Amino acid sequence: MLPRGALLARCTRSMFRAVVIAITVLATSRVRADPEPEPEPERMPEPDHRVGLSVHIGGISNLSGDQALEIEGAWRHAGDAWFRVAIAGGVPLPHENGRVLEARFGVERRREACGRGCFYTGLDLALVAADVHDEPDDVILRGLFAIGRAGLDAGSDMLRFRLGIEVWLGAGRVHDLEPDHMPPIDAMTTRFLPGFAFTTGVSAQF
Image 1 (cartoon, rainbow, N blue to C red):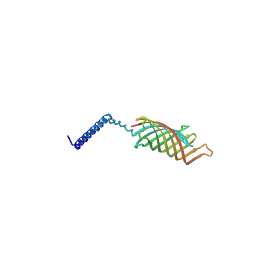
Image 2 (cartoon, helix red, strand yellow):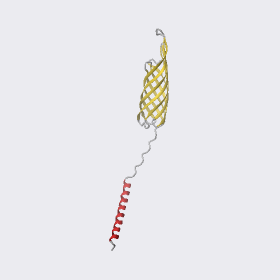
Image 3 (spheres, helix red, strand yellow):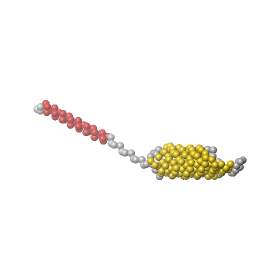
Image 4 (tube, rainbow, N blue to C red):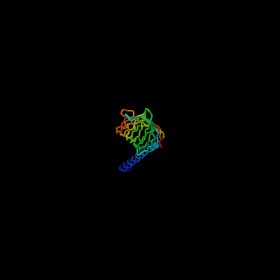
């Protein structure tokens, strides 16, 4: 018969082996029952460039309304920041006699993952030349404007639609010709010129 000490040591080793075996079996069964989830497929990054066409209807307060067609090109600078350039041409309202030309450069912020839709904000600097003819009167404007922009951008990764508003703040030289006025007016002044416009457009991203 084994001494008590040897018997106790043997029992302890047997219990230890049983505990190790039980832990191993439980761990193995847990791994088999809970397999690692498959990684989600990575979403393709949105395009970093766009070209667009939009219509503006608005005007410069106390001077003239206008309707213009704008062509823009834009590229992503980083994350949600974009740069854009645009040119626009149109006619004054309500008489549609004359022309309005704009050249713009601006920055824009739009959520990096815009998906089906998101809001955008932006700020443009614009050189504006407007010639308004209302026989026999003429108004000629050359001005520089800061234009705040905001609206909704929606669509797919390739084709986007926009609806927005613009607020114009600037100054310019205004040449006012009114030959039928008594006495005739031929005045050149520098004016502070606020304005606004509604815009809608479509663009392609690539």
